[in-house]
Structures are given as C-alpha cells and as structure tokens.
Amino acid sequence: MLLRRQSAPQIRRDSGSALVFKATSEMAYKTEGRAEQCERNLYFPSTLRKNAFLVKMPRVTGTYERTTVAGEEVAAFIPRPLPPVDPPLALDETARALLRSAEEALGRLDLARGMVPSLDWFIYGFVRKEAVVSSQIEGTQATLVDLLAFEAQEEASASADVQDVCNYVDALNFARGELANENGLPLSMRLLNQTHARLMSGVRGADKLPGEVRRSQNWVGGSRPGNAAFVPSPPQALPEALSAFEKYMHAEDELPPLVRAGLLHVQFETIHPYLDGNGRIGRLLVTLLLEQWGLLSAPLLYLSLFFKRHQAEYYRRLAAVRTDGDWEGWTRFFLEAVTTIATEAVQNARDLSTRVSKDRGQVLAAPSSSVMAARLFEMLPSHPIVTIAGAMNLLSTTRPTATKAVTSLVESGVLAETSGKRRDRTFGYAAYLELLRVGTDL
Image (tube, rainbow, N blue to C red; front, side):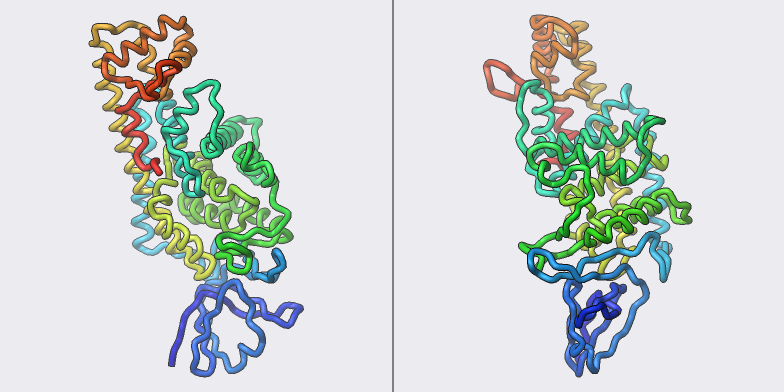
C-alpha cells in the first residue's frame, strides 16, 4: 500500500461544491490503496474524499480561500496571526544553542564599531552591500562596484538595475531616520508603506502602486496563476492580516526578540502586501527590527548575503512554514544566518580597519604627501570611488589642488585609475573595495 505525505489541509466546505482546505503541518491522504497528493493550490471535489483516511498533524498555519485570477481559479493562502500556536514554537536544545551563538555574534558585531575612527565608514559600506545583495536576490543585475561608480559620477544617469539599488539605500535611510526622530513614524505599516514608496520610485516601480497595499491578487513564481508556486492572501483579507502583523510587532511575547524578527520576516513574505518589492521590504524589515529592539546599534548586518548563498533553501524554508507548519526549521535557518553573517562582518570590519591603517602609513610616507591628500584619504572608506570633481567637492578646494591630492594617492599606491579615459576619469580604492565587495558580484 502506497502512502504519500503532502502538506495540505484539514478540509472544510465553502459555499460552493468544492472543498476549501485548512493548512496543517502535514497530512497523509490515502484513497482505496492509491496515494493521492494534496496540492496546496488546488481544490478537491467531494468524490475524492470518499473512502479517504485523514491523519492530521499538529500545527495549523492558515487557511486557503478560493479566488479567481486572470480567469483561473486558485487557492490564496491567508496565514494565521503570530505567534505560532497549537503547538507554540518550540525552541529545543539545538535552537537554544543557535540562539546563544547568534546573540553573541551580534554582540561582537556591535563592538566592532569601535575598531574604526568613524562608524559612518561601515554604515556606508555595509548598508550598500545589503542593498546590492537583497536586490540581486530579486533578479537585479548590479554589483557593489556598479553602485559606487554611479554615486561617484555627479551627473551620470543610473541604469534601471543601479536605480533599484539606490532606491533600497534611500528607503532604508528614510526608515532609519523616521525611527530615530522622536517626531517620526514608529515601526508600523504606515512606515513600511512610505519606505516602499521610496523603494519603488522610478522607472520600474511607477506602475506597482508605490507605497500602497495592493488592491488585486498577485502570485509568486510560475508563468500564470494556475501554475504559480504560491498565491498570497487575497486583497480583501489584507487589512485583517496586516493589522495582526502590526500588533505582533509591538506585542509582549516570551519569545526572544531575535526569534521574533525571523517570524515577522516570514509573515510579511507570506502576506505579500505589495504588487512588487515584498522581498526587499521584508529583508529591510529585519534590519529595522534589530536596530529598533536594541540587538544592534547600527545596520551592520548584511543578512541577505546568507540568503543569496542559500537561495534555494531560503525559499524552501519560507514555503515549509506555510505548507508544513515548520516554524522550528525556519528559526534554526534564520539563527544560523545571523551567526554566520555577523561573524563574517566582524572579520570584514577587522580586515577593512587593518587595510586603512596600513594604507594611511603609505600615504603619509609618500614623497608627494600633503595635507589635502591625507584629508582625501580619510574620506575614501565612504567614497571608495572618486573623480577629480568629486574630490573638489569633498575637499572644498580648487581643481588643481584636488588633482594634486588624487595624484598623490595614486603615486602612494592607494588609488588606481579605473575608467581608462583621458577625461572625466574615475579612481578606485582598489584594496578596500576588494575586501568590501565580497559576495556582491553577479
């Protein structure tokens, strides 16, 4: 006798002739000696239920609601509010060990800010690293060097891919500014909506209702709704789902804050409230939560790098929460991601700090060294690609003086010409960029 297990559903009947399924952690479905697979986006007629034997596993994660999209009938998933219940999220010994490691790694990362004369150096680089990688997960074809090169050119026009990344940086800076301002918006859907408006501004986002919760059904994966990998909540269910989501952000909960941040990321991705940009806002939300809840004092964790490296598992873990009720598996994955990237970021901070200290000595010892060259060098970690015009602005000086400063840094081996042009040349802090760009190439 065959038995196939498939996450799917405790059955309830809707007003039509089909059956609606309530998602449970797992269900065995056996019909007259044949294995029948319960597909999560399908409805099964009553005849299939005849002579069926159902085995229900513990956790209910949400409900499916029948809806029509582009002429096709699909089942849209409406998640239950957080926290997980029936049973509650269980942190076993393995999960608690992972939690301790993640919290300790975040503590070390927060201390790493003291390694450099200016925290702005790391915020500048690490925020852009997160912006690039988070955008790459969604298919954006831009690298960290592409972004920095664009920022160095004052009058350049950005490609659509680079503009996507610039929008992410602008969106995160806006949200952090609001949270830091006593008169600014609190962490809320209103803040996320305004952050989304900045993320989606420009050529690619104009028709995606920037800053607005969607009013139509969307789907994820597949060429059409009928073969989609996932159909999120229908628009009429969004107000209630988002209200519960927002309440949980501010609720008292016995679960550790770091675990809660991971739960909220999944819940946001499952609700999928926007027509586009959900993944980037969902990952940006983790950055905001870690800072808002005091787990980090600055946005130094570029967590998207772990999700990019393990992209298939990232999507599988998100889906398993919905289909299998596997909050525990997601939590272990998320905590491992935090530990791994926080540890790497500490080492990256050390390497960058060591590099700057070594190169500072070269600059000061160079025969052509000058006060202006030394000043420009100290600005390079937050402007690792520069032009002569850019150096003029940074130093508030004339073109000849800025040119001499740049030339001095080239002669000392710190800057290298990267454009290959005779006019409007660009110069990169190559050794620093080599360390910072790890993981951001396509």
